Length: 259
Image (cartoon, rainbow, N blue to C red; front, side, top):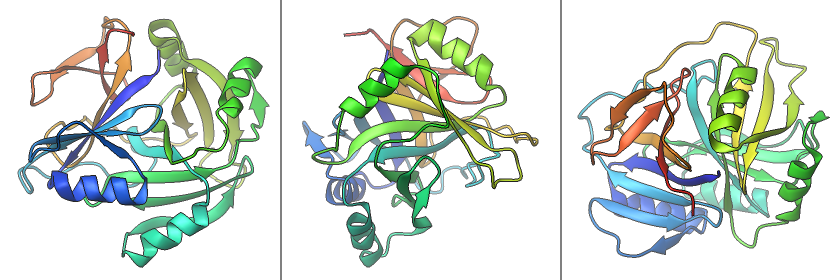
């Protein structure tokens, strides 16, 4: 079942609402409060939750060799135009727009609290297609009328084991791979698709660092998947009491019944 919702912690909900609605055209759903806001991102929702600044130091670092969450990806049109608007507003970029492996154009930047975001323009030309039907469904989504949520990227130890787990429990299919031949670390990306959303899986041939998820600091908190509660994983509690599961690579998610 697909990713339904992504919980992002922020220190100022209204500021983050203005950021995501201005630069990514996410639409507010319901009431915005000091503590929470829900934004429609076409294929999923982004839930903003307030946390206190400086309460605890985040252990997330912008190095893809740290396992667990890496970034949130949004499919867009007019990527360079959108990037220029972001730059004009003083938004910090970690990668300027460029043509990437797979014949897509991408860029990376940060939200007001440092959550790592990506914009992607175009359909991926996979190095290996492993599920032709899944790739066809992805391409049938077409060019977005406004930016749409596409994926959560995570770094893992073993792509095969990750695929097997999310296939068995949530119906994700490994639709294709992209190789990064110029990366001396042995970088490869696998795309696990369910519904209209993707888990983008990073693997490397070199050693990775572990990171335990944090639910009360600014940044990505966890994703919400549609399905049944899994067994055999570490459980934790989000600040609002939601049960969150942590997979072997430190990626955190909750579950809710499939529609």
